[in-house]
Amino acid sequence: MAGPIFIGHEIYRASTYGPGHPLAIPRVSLATDLARALGWLTADNYRQSPQATLQELADFHDMDYLRALAAAEQTIPPPEIQHRFSLGVDGNPLFAEMYRRPATACGGGLLAAELLRTDQTRVVYNIAGGQHHGMADRASGFCYLNEPVLTLRRLLTSGARRIFYLDIDAHFGDGVQTAFHDDPRVFTLSMHEQARWPQNRDAKPGSPGTVGDRAGGAALNLPLPKALNDCEFAYLMDHVVLPTISQFNPDVVYLQCGCDALADDPQSKLMLSNQALWSAVRKVKKAAHRLIVSGGGGYNPYAVGRCWAGVWAILNGFDIPRELPPAARYLLSAIRWHHRRGRQPKPDWLTTLGDRPNSGAIRDDIYVLADLSLGN
Image 1 (tube, rainbow, N blue to C red):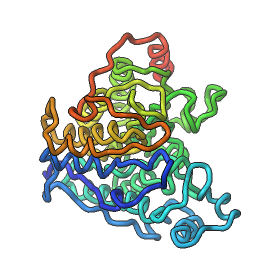
Image 2: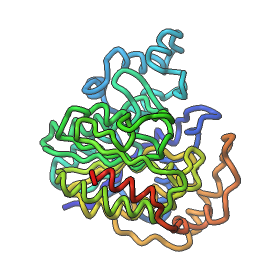
Image 3: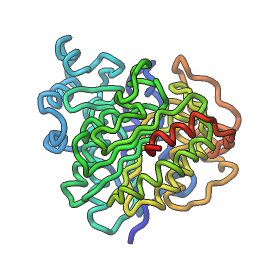
């Protein structure tokens, strides 16, 4: 059986959401370059992502919306179209590759599903995927298309009987849960910061994204308290997430590995180190028969690049060096983070891949959350 496959594309290097946007930073390209600089990417384990066709995207997305999205690359849409489809508004900017870029991420997910179907590959890393907020008929939360939904639907039509979708992004994976709300073949579990967008701060138990939200029984949500540390995250992984995966017994696990839960990210108030996320990847890989891992959120370029390069190392069992070689240090030192929440890099952001673990006591809230999630 072939080793893990990395799916990427140069479109992520050349396109941008526009100046001032939280995603106007190098992420996929930086992580890819770091993996290459560390000798972890070769012609044997790298695949170029195709661009999903209009017909493939229409497996989930409304055709009128897709046509409007594609047309917006050429001509600024009129206000009624912008507001109908959330294009150019609500944090979803108009930019030159706004159709081709997410369509390429979706093509990578479809390729991942095809690679798993052949039984020659067990693990695929579609690093540019993970756009979990996109709705069938509109953009949402910086996501113009929903790659996880399209990928999971392709897996189902390719023979998968049960799929477990695990989302560790700091933001609730609302688009994926909504898409599979009534499908018992797909279990969605989202670990996300409590009261973080898109969940209303005053949401009552049972509202989307809260711990009481079971989405027809095939979903579970773990809304996480602010300042979550590595030990608390590991406790929930070991006592809730992994037993739930085992009980569901899926053919395939899809891990959305957004890294905006990291302590250095400006868009959340969780306090994880990348060691915590890498440990989760390691555990999920061991628990899964077949595995797709994607990216997702992440708004500190130094943190994202280092974390996602490390994910690729974990999937392969590569040793992560204590100190980065000069080629990798150069890549990190060349970053310029101009966003209003950007800041000067800490010294270890330029010299190491791994963060210092953020260990700490497990708060009572975590034990209560675990008990509620397990129905105790």
